[in-house]
Image (cartoon, rainbow over the protein chains, first blue to last red):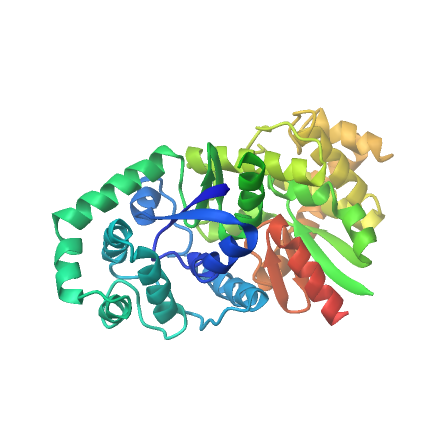
Length: 197
Length: 197
């Protein structure tokens, strides 16, 4: 079966387009996808890569572009969504913890929906606790672990791995040694996976 | 007929993918395309937008991504090409002058081919003079006008117009009020033009 690693950070705007359609996409394309949250902000800061924060014109375009592409994919969206997130690391510490326990994908989908449809920031309340409850988790227990040593170590290790693969943005898709960056490269990554698989 | 403005700067790497396929693409899609060179570097500097210069990892990805996409489109390419260009403004002053006289598109295609296939920088010799001769122009006469008041005024005016349209990168496609950025948005821009046209 064709395989692909889907690297993303909750906090990336364009990653919403991938998160919201990935399960259907994988099923339709016979693709086995491993979801891998990491801390893109750590890598981008180290690389002096600031795509939007100080760029209002590019940012305005980004929202319009996302709106058009969401329509293309039949996804609900309300833009501009709150941006940037005040606590991107926490949002992803919860996700990496969830991946070790089987609820990470559901949490990612839930928190992105609340962020991009309901307008509630991911990585902080009410989105964070509501998304955890929605996937059958106790927010108090999960947040204690995610915000502590465990979450820190898991996210740090995945971010190191991402960095080692040459990943510099979210979403990214990795097939063997081949890296594809951006929701708009999903088709090419899937084709590469099909060829390799 | 569906209409689209194709804004580009000779100096943009990804614009090679558009320049090299645009004529065939326009014919195949029944699209009337107006080629509009401008000075993207002026706009990007004003907006603190530095996509590659200080970012070696992102730059390495860009070359690989271009190589894959060139293969997808059946275009010849040798990467990495010389980058950045030492005189991006001059390359585009020649292009805007050429647009007023009917040889601007041919010059753009010729100079990009020499840059991305033969490895000779656009905007300086031998590429510049060879490309002009290839489109039936006298390099000495053209360069005198392009490097002087005339080229400066033409490029400055087009760059002002681009800025007014919200353009911040190359290539960009404009259909009415709608802006699409990136070679990878050409299909969406063409679809928008077909709907509008």
